[in-house]
Image (cartoon, rainbow, N blue to C red; front, side):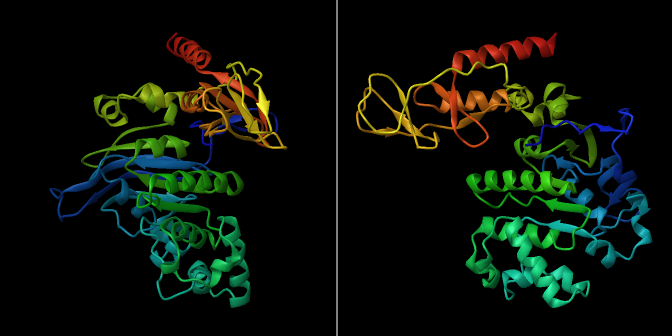
Length: 376
C-alpha cells in the first residue's frame, strides 16, 4: 500500500540521497489558441517526477492534468518550455518511437475489438518487430501478472467485463517493459468495488515492478491511496501543490487545495498514521456454528475468520466486516472496528489467521494521541 512517503535512498555508506528524477517539466505551457493571448490549458508548469514512484495528477475538470500527462509522450505538443525523460529532451526522439517507449492506459482501455486479448497485449511488441512466438510468450506471462487466467488469451474484448478489459489494458502497457507508465483516469469507468480491486492490483504490480507511473484522476481519495507524490492542479492549468499525500492532507497550501481535498481530510489522514499502538485482545472463537453466550468468532480449521456468532441470533452467521492486519494504519483499524457487528475489529496475521480483536474505543484513543502528536 502506498504510504505517501517517498522511499529514502541511501549510498553504500548509509548517507541519504535525493530520489532520481525521471520526468522533468521546465516552464511548460500549453495554449490551445495561437499567439501569446491564447487560452492556457497548462500554465508555466515546472516539476520533477521521481523515478520508481507513483505520481498522481489530480484536480477538477479543465485544470490541465490530462493535458500535462499527454505532453509527456507528445500526444499533445507543448507550446512553450521543455520536458525531459531520463535526462533526454522528448523533442530529440520521434513522436511514434517516444510513445512506443512508454506504457499508456486510458479510461476506456482502448482495446481493439476485432483482435483477441493476446493480440491486444502484444500490439507494441509486434510493432517493435518482436518475433510472434516470443511476443505471445511475453503476452501470456503478462496475463498472469495482471491476474487473468490463460484461457482469456483467445477471448475478445466484448467477452470481458470492464475491470477485466482494464487489466488487459495494463498488460498491454507493460508488454515492452517500459520504464514509464502513463495512466489517464484508467479506473473511473468501473464500479466502486472493481475500482478498489484495480487500485490494489496496481499497488501490487508497483511493488514488484517499480515503474515510474504518472496517474491522472479527479478523485482525491484515489490520489491519496495510490500516490507516493500528488500534484494538485487548479483551474487554469496552475500547479497548486505538489507533495506527499500526507502533507497535502495535513497542510493544504491554500483555500483551493483545502476545499478540493474536502472537509473530511482529517479522516483521510488516518491512512498515514501507524496502527501498531492499538491493543489487540484475545477473542472467543469456534469452528462450529453453535449457540453462544457472547459474541464469538467463527473460524476455519486454519483459523481464518468466517463471521460472527451472536448470542441474540442463535444458529445465524453474521458477516464480520473488514479486517485489520498488524502494521496497517489507524484508518484500517477504525474501519474494522466500526464495520464489525460485534464492535470488535478482527485482527489477522499475514496468512489471514486470526490474532485477536481491536476495540473501537481504543482505536479512537490512538487516533486522538496521533492527532495531539501531529499538532504538537
